[in-house]
Length: 518
Image (cartoon, rainbow, N blue to C red):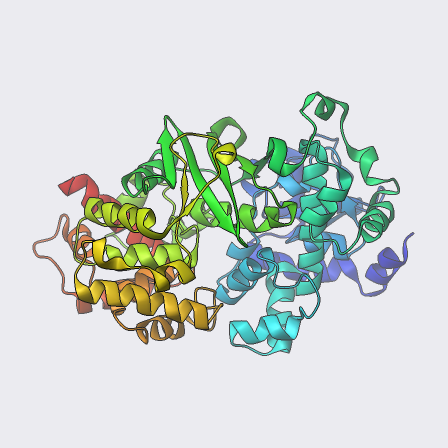
């Protein structure tokens, strides 16, 4: 028995595990029934550690179910790994839907996980204390919330994500091991090898399946990398694609058939991504072509954010459907997601350009701005001829001559003020404090009103409780089937019962308005 396993037993592990399970609405016996039936509804919601093998699995693992007395159930992969179990090579926990941030009602945990995914606990100087400060709470409270909702500490969550991402790249790509180590955030190849030896008792290369060797070999910049990103069904892909298509900026984004492509600019380097839907696998296929392998986790995080892959829409829908206004809307579109922004500044600029104009007019202004001050992609990087520009950075917007933009003076001044604010505060579009604090911080920028601040919070900061109550589309959507359109104040009051998922209620109201008014 390993040292970790002995420590787990001494702490009374099974008692602690069962104490955690009510957070996900289950007890150990119910978890075991889910395991025996391989019920996909629980995939991503729980993980099972098998004491006889030292392995932890997803509840849909095709292997023969272990005896009940040999099973230990955990609310996250990190909790199972912290208890001393190693990931299963057969069901591959790294490919499970990433639902940890949606368990319970803690927006703080959700925001913390988003920051961890973007590298908040990677590299020198990173600490749980600094992460807690960014979230507006104390370190002890953050640790308590993570333990309560995920069964593991923030450090363990970050380490587990690192290992599982590396494992996914080993299984699904022919990237050299050195590049995989860098992509997953390991400080050195030696540390990468030691970690995999400790977990799997074999070198990383031994985990690579023979079928992978049929794939082309090379770096991310040369051949690109394709990763599969899972979600928990249902997923309304057509609605997501229609949303992105209606706002696609010329030169930056392209949609053909059911494939979404766009350019990427990060740390001064450019590349492209291409996203397609695999409904039979409940996942998206993402092909990333970018010259720096270290950027892979951040790019994957952006894809997850744009396509809202972490949402447990069934749980969110069940909460919102308690209101008779929303119930029929959710029944009609059960897989509707809240699309995110690829980049905080990009989304904020789009929001400013979209003030008091149609979606199409805002799209054209965004295209014009990109033509004025965007970054041109080298011809060799253009996976599609239409992908030729990267959206402008804060520096480019602040320094640009916007006289040819064709927007009112106040709008142009707001763009410059927004860019300058982003340059002064690198965490401007990251989760910090409550949604009210986020909105107040954004409203302090010249030209950003309440509607714009809430819209940025919803799409860029990914505040699940953001709600631009004065939006005309929301007011019209709420009026469908009613005798009169509500005022913003009345809608705001009604939305109180929709917390903490008001952003998803807004998405359903927008969808209802679009269906009714075109």
